[in-house]
Length: 411
Ligand SMILES: Cc1ncc(COP(=O)(O)O)c(C=O)c1O
Image (tube, rainbow, N blue to C red):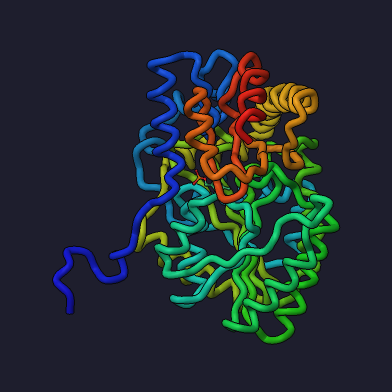
């Protein structure tokens, strides 16, 4: 018995690296001084500093009926939304995925809701999950909330390729120690680095997962696909990694965390999904049982307007095609910024981490005071152990040369 106002399990909850809070600080500093460069925000902004919004999303939002706007969303999603998520995520590989796997969609409050439900339901309290050493820091908080710890493997080998060897070692060690492996891979366009695994890398990962599963150890692969639509590849090509998924062993559960935030610019609406796949029907029955329960028990249901809009985009081929063209415009915006960043970084001798797409570029650093040093020169970034994350999603082309020079000065 204690006399604390909070429960014992909540005594040590302190948000140490709050990306949203630092973003607010950067915004406030920029409001006072327009010369400040705010490279913190994981939301795509245009060159005029305004949020990148999709015309299709805007128009559909304006035309929603009362029931499409205000009603509770069905726990399992509308047909248009849930079937559409499967089409969207798997693209041209949908038929082969459906042939091999039982598939189920559970709408969640953003990709974060998918992560949080999954970590909570597919671990024992006190166990740890595995992620690469450069990861989106809220994973820690989402895991902590589920009474789950975090262990890491090295993302890169000495050539800055995927470090399959370290992954294999750490995965097997954790799995045999605790009789479970829950792996999160944020791919393509890893936040914070912009790194993308190749299909061959995925094949290697899946072969290790299969080995572990054959030891009769439960294996859960959480594929965080938040930036799937921002890989610097054709829309369909960024789905090619799912060919590797076809080899997953029968007893493995894979959950794709789908996010409506980046793909549709519907950040504040809080819409996403857990897309569960397994070759075992029994495992999918478990996935549905605990997933439906947690949705009801944790947030009841998700944003109805967002589900309606996304459902309409997914189910109307004409709107979908127009929307895909708009995504290309969004990608182009990032592509141009990356090109300039690359050019200036080369000229200034600033080494950036390999970038395959997404909102962020990463630069490694040994400077422990990097955040403060950069702020003193009017630059806000997110600092993480060993590196900084630069959100090119919110930096204008005209700011990049100055940004790179300041980074180079302090790195
Ligand atoms: C790597 C990663 N995963 C998941 C999310 C979750 O996004 P949301 O909950 O807004 O869908 C984000 C958002 O920044 C992210 O960067």
